[in-house]
Length: 163
Image (cartoon, rainbow, N blue to C red):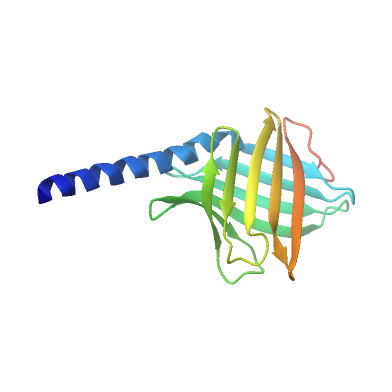
């Protein structure tokens, strides 16, 4: 009886880890260079590439019209103890901030960390083959806040100043 329980537990654990691993593989549409511009002329860029194993590595930046970088982050989507996480490392924080994947398929993914200041929720949606939207949601200073960013896949014409 105990052997059957252990075998059943191992099979369920293996199947669960396979499905979590598959969720990251479904995000291959994120790979590439994505650029967008806000109403103030700030250019935001995210570059995603396949990492080692079953992970995605990314970098993000916000650049002024004069070419000054005003924000940088290192990003990663990887399994942490068998669960997919979005890991953001920014200079303002003492260490990486982890957001647990709560939903994903071939066209969108949602990550949450309700204990984080802002954002608490990050959503990526592939709108078309060459456009993507990112929504940052949460509460800041007791007030609900949403930031939406629209990206286009860079296919040779860059929005970056001087490019």
